[in-house]
Every structure is written in structure tokens, then in C-alpha cells.
Amino acid sequence: MKIRVCQGVSGIILITMVTSLMLVYNNSGSGNRSSSSSSPSSHHRGPVPSTKKPERPQRLPTPTLEGYTGVMDRKPLKMHCRTCALVTSSGQLTRSRRGEEIDSSECVIRMNDAPSISYQQDVGRRTSLRVVAHSSLQRVLRSRQELLNASQDTVFIFWGPSSRMRRDGKGHVYNNLRLLNHLLPKLKVYIISRIKMLKFDELFKNETGIDRKRSNSWLSTGWFTMVIAMELCDRINVYGMVPPDFCRSSSHPSLPYHYYEPSGPDECSMYLSHERSRRGSHHRFITEKAVFANWARTLNIHFRQPDWKPAAARARVNSSRAPLPAGS
Image (cartoon, rainbow, N blue to C red; front, side, top):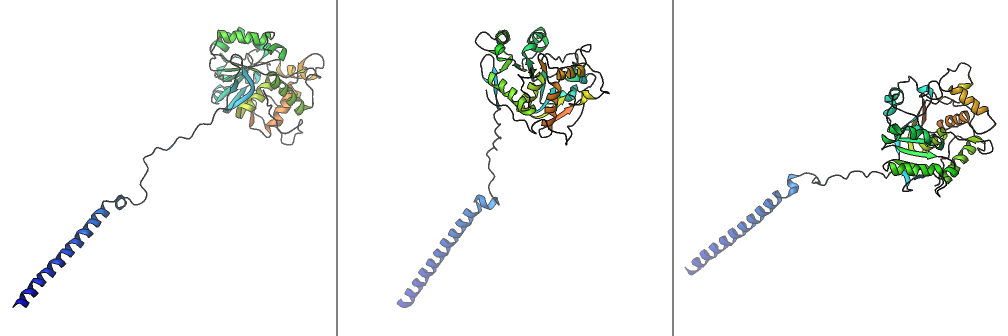
């Protein structure tokens, strides 16, 4: 009888232990499943998207053009353009209706005192850079209302011989520019340094074989403007420049030298007389155009109004690519 009671008690204890183990196991499994179902990986297949905003690409700093220094602060010019319209002063632009096309360029470059008011349909209305010869300063001052007062966003680069641009009080062009900048402090006025001017002379001699000083030649504002544009612009569209052999044809049209002086001298007569002259100072307009045509074969330079391309097989002037002048 005692044995049966003991066996009964033992059975109850064993059943209780088994039941307890099963409950523990089930609770453990349930806990694991619950934990698993609440894990982010069960809801998102693949990586969790980042909430961090993408970084904007950093803008490259504006390149510094050495050799062009501010009249007041003496800091170098910082400027760059993807596309440039280099607008000459040629009568070729008369009735061209290229104004809208010119203004669509990122930068518009003009020379000396060439106006845009009253000529917007043909030459555009915007001016980003104006390259001015020392001899044109007085004409620019006479057109102060249009060229200076209304040109606070325009960069002006003046060039001239070192005797007139010196900073020791004896350079009268430089003195006038300082006075001008005092009167119009927001005007962006730069001059070309003496070392840089020598680089322009050196480039002319390398490209043509002609020593500028020995040949009594003056580089034209067009020469300075084209070389500056090559430093400044990724692409240059030149408006109003004729091919180097244009005036040698007997059938060339008669057009004024400047579009804003319809009664002025004939363009080709001016080019030919300067090119043939051997007495006194003169420009080498046709020689310079031959160099520009040569550069256009390998550089991103294009001619508009008239539209032309340099001949591929034409004999080169001296080299096929212009070594841009450096130095300050």
C-alpha cells in the first residue's frame, strides 16, 4: 500500500516537472519569435535608407589672371567665362542683327569707347569686359554717362606704355584712372602691368618673327583683347573680324572702320595703309588677323559676321598654338 502511494506521488511530481519544462520552452520560443518579428530587418529587406541630405558639389574658385591689377587695391583680376562674345568695332556689324545672339553669351567683351546704345540690334546691350587703350581714355571719359556711370558691373582693363602707366606719380594715364576710381569707387578698373606688357610684345614676335619696337609697330587693342579673351574664356565667338586676306580682294565691299562712325574712314583702306606703312608708328592689323586665324585652327575660337573658318592647309605664321603670356 505504501509502495502504491509513493509511486502515485512520484508520478505526479514527474508530470509536474515535464509540464513545467514544456511551459519554459514554449515561453522561450515565443520570446524569440516576438523578438525576431520586432527586428527592423523583418520589415526592411535591404539596407535602411539614409536620412542624410546629399552634399552639394563645391564650386571651383574663380581663376586669378596674373598681370591685371586693380588701380586702387592692386589685387589681381579674378574672372572666368565659359562662352565669350568678343565684339569688334568693325562696320561689318552694321545691320547684322546679331545683338540678341551676342547677349546670349555668358560674357560680352568690347573695345575702347565702342557704344552699344542705339546699336543694340546689331551689337547687343551687355558689356562684361571692356579693353581700353591709353589713347582712348579721353574718349571714354567724354562718354562717361554711358560707358562709366551705367557700367558698375563692367570690368575695365586699360593698357599703355609703362611711361604712362607708372605708379610713382609720373604716369598721367594711371593718375587719371586713380582719380576716376575715387569718383566712382564701385568701378572695376585694372591696368596691365609692365611685365605683362612685355609678354604681349614677346608673343607677337614669337608668332610673326617681327620685333614690334624695331618695326615701329603698335599692337592694336584687338591684339590685347584677343589674348586676354584666350586667358579668360573657354570659347570665343568673334563678331565683325574679317579674314586676313579679305582686303586683298578687289571685290571686297566698302564698309566703315567703326560701325558707330558711318562717315569715317574705310575699313580696308585703314588696314592696308597701316600694314604697308614703314614710317612712323602703325598697327599690323592684317598680320594680327593672320595670327588669330592660325590660333583658331587649334583653339576654341570662331568668327561671326562675316562667318568664316581658317583654311586647314594655309601656311602658318610662326606657330600653331599661342603660348598665353604669363607673369605679373
